[in-house]
Amino acid sequence: MFQLLGDIADERRFCTPLSFSERCYQLLHSSFPSLIIRTGICVAGASFKNASQKNDLSAIGKFKTIVSGPDRRRDDSMWQCFRSICVPRCQTLRIGFNREGATLNIACLGWGSLLWEPGSLPLAGEWYGDGPALPIEFCRVGDGGELSTAICMNASAVKVSWALLDAPTVQAACAALRAREQIPEQREGAVGSLLVLRTPIGPLMQWAAERRIDAVVWTALPPRFADIEGRILSADDAVAYLSGLTGDTREHARNYFMRVPEQIDTPYRRIIKRQLGWHSE
Image 1 (cartoon, helix red, strand yellow):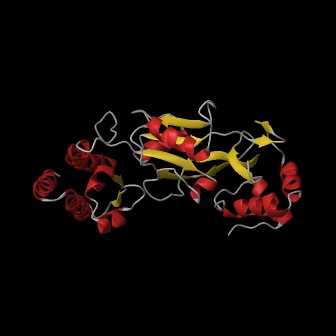
Image 2 (cartoon, rainbow, N blue to C red):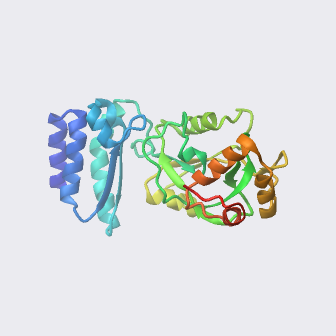
Image 3 (cartoon, rainbow, N blue to C red):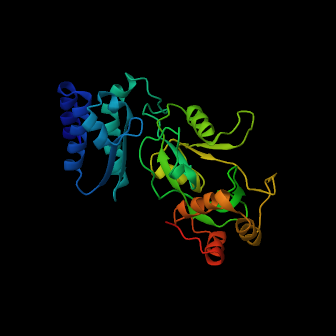
C-alpha cells in the first residue's frame, strides 16, 4: 500500500491532470486485480473515455471511483490512499466536498421519463439499474395525459435506477431536478433528498453508503387521479382511464408506458399489458 501511495505521488508530480488520472487507474487496477473497479471521469455527462478523447484537463475535478471487493478493510485502505492524492487537485477547481474532504457523490433516483428524457438535469454519467427498492406504480396522470410512475403507498417495491449528478451541493441538485420536472419553487415536498450519515440506518441510506454516495435526491410528486393530488387510482381505474384516451394523447400515453424499463414490473403494469396489449420496447 505504501509503495502504491509513493508511485501515485510520483505520477502526480510529473503528469498533467488527465494523464495523472489515467495513471492512477492503471496503478490501482494492476495493484488490486481481484477487485472490481468502476472508474469514470464525468464532466457534463461525459464518460471517462469521452473526457480522455476530448483531452479535458478539468476532468480530474469530477473523478469518481467506486470500489468493491471481498476484503472491505483493504478496499477502505485503497480508497483512503487514492482520495488523499486526488482531493488536493480537486480543491483547486472549487468542487463541492463532503466532511472528509472528498468531492460529493450526489445520486438522483429515476423510474420514469428521467431515464430517457433527462432534459436539463446535469447527469454526470449513465443510469444504473441497481437502485434501491421503492414503492413505485403507474399512478399519476401527467400533464400530457400519460399515466406516469410515482412513489405510491399502495405499490409493491421495485428496483429503480440511479445516476450521479454534476452538482456541487445537495441544494443545487434539488434545484436542478426541480427545474427539469418543472415544479414551482413554492411547491414544497415535491423533491426529496437524503444525506448519508457515518452510521447509515435504513434501507435507502444503507444502499447509498454501500456505493459511497453522499446524498440522494428524487422526484416526490404524489399520485394524481381525477385532478386530485394524492388520489391513488385502482387497477381498474388505470385500465379504464387509458382505454378512454384517444388520438395523440393515447399514443403519447402508450409510448410512455412502453418506454418505462421492464424492471419497473408492477401489478398495474402487468394488468395493463394483459388487457390493453401494451408491451415495452
